[in-house]
Amino acid sequence: MTNYGFVKVAAAVPVVEPANCKANAEHIIDMMKEAESKGVEIICFPELCITGYTCADLFHNSLLQANAIRAFEMIVEASKSCHSLIAVGMPYAVGNSLYNCAMVVNNGEILAAVPKTFRPNYNEFYEQRWFASSFHNIVDEIEILGQQVPFGTDTLINHNGTMVAVELCEDLWTPIPPSSLHCLAGAEIVLNLSASNAIIGKNNYRRQLISQQSARCVAGMIYASAGFGESSTDLLFAGSAMIAENGSLLAESERFTLESQMILSEIDIERIRHDRQKNQAFMEGLRPFQCNKEYIIVNSTNEQKPLNLTRYVDPAPFVPQGKALDERCQEIINIQSTSLVVRLAHTKIRSVVVGISGGLDSTLALLVCVHAFDKLGLPRKGIIGITMPGFGTTNRTKSNAEVMMEELGVTSYCISIADACRQHFKDIDHDPSITDVTYENTQARERTQILMDMSNKHNALVIGTGDMSELALGWATYNGDHMSMYAVNTGVPKTLVRHLVQWYADYVAEPKVREVLVDVIDTPISPELLPADDKGNIAQKTEDLVGPYELHDFFLYYMLRFGFAPEKIKMLALKAFENKYSEETVNHWLKTFMRRFFNQQFKRSCMPDGPKVGSVNLSPRGDWRMPSDASSMEWQENI
Image (tube, rainbow, N blue to C red):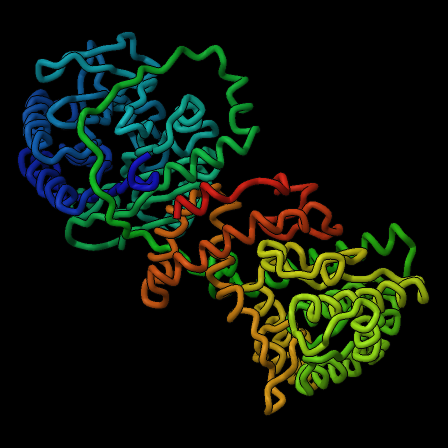
């Protein structure tokens, strides 16, 4: 697909004058021209926007019906120079019935006429008084403005390779909306032309309905509802418009405005196709409806427009904002700790061993262990925390580790690895002045040996501390910190670890523990395998070596969650970090990510058990299975 799979769409709410079809058409055409200037490819207008939704018994007046057709002709003519796919609402008589229709137009061609199926006839609604249902339809084609046009609900429009379907207002509010069937038949974007009035609480419900249906259908939804100008005799129409994609609301209009308004965003068709392909249950939903007749496919004719991406791209896709972040943190720690509870209950083991460095990851693992032991009612002394200072350990991290263990009430040990590593250097004839990978990994494996042997001594489980971002980059020593008996952090990306520790500090920790946790959060990320600087500070900073974790987590999310190619990931990263990282910087670290991600798969192929906590996971027994010999060449070239 061109434009990285994005389709720029709009939901437009024009000011209307009930029964003044010519004026309404002029408003619609003005918005069509505005959308054209902004590169919009698909525009959805409200239900009955050519006449106004509130015309009541005037709908049966022959002059209103004739004027609606004349106004529609103006719109069709204007579409020749606007090129977008346009859906507008109008009444249209077929045979002995009047239908509430959506008319789909492109480049002067009327592609489809879609009648409304479910007509509300309760409380303030009286649509059955004026309109027939699509169930009453007995023809498949109508003639309008000299064109033969498909007529019915079973029409899909192929617009530049994207399948588009249409439904109207109440159709969406039914147990099995037409859009569900449309999407099973191949629709990727659904237009909903609506006239939904404003009453207390309805907009929140409507927002949930649109988001949920877009999620259930794994589709994009463009929703446009009637606004200012509709009669306020009994009701108010506030002009609600929304654009959603697979459960996420991309854009929403301001309600209660006195002017026409249009919202824009981009729907990611590649993302939708990826999720449908991956979710095998999606097409299983077709089985009860196999008896339905086949859909008509109508092709549009214009070329795709260049992309100017306006939708927000979150630079931290793993980290929600606001109150949702607190809820997410609590949920994740509960998942981690309860998973450990299950493992302890199954093995009947009542002790764990954790290596505590004073860094973020081991701190989170320790907090999870404390949470799990508290859940089980086990004494915290069964948690054996071991700090193992080596050649790069600073006083800051060592002190934080020791104070944290003391304040949390766990059993603590301090076991230096320096002498053991020096002996090992002698054994393998390595010059310790050469601070290479052998120098570093000797320390990591010595620490793991201590943890494993202490677990044997105390009949305990070794709890792994490494996080998902380190697994993605292979930033772990094979059979060193790479290995454990249960790894509680493997489902947590680095960008979220800091927030989890902060949440624990804010809502759970006692004051002295909170003070230590805050300093841990402020400590630079480092394996501390190289000697400290002259001032005793951390000299080896991980992000200086492998790159910013916020970029790597961004790359990881879009590669694993949606299967995007590097060129699209790069485009999204440049949008998300446009004021922070240059294209050269993004290129550099994206190449690093791809190289390391492919080359380090062998470490993930034998990673220990650990809980999945989000939509992305690297376990070879779950979300990610990849041959260790897979080549990264084409991914590198794609950047």
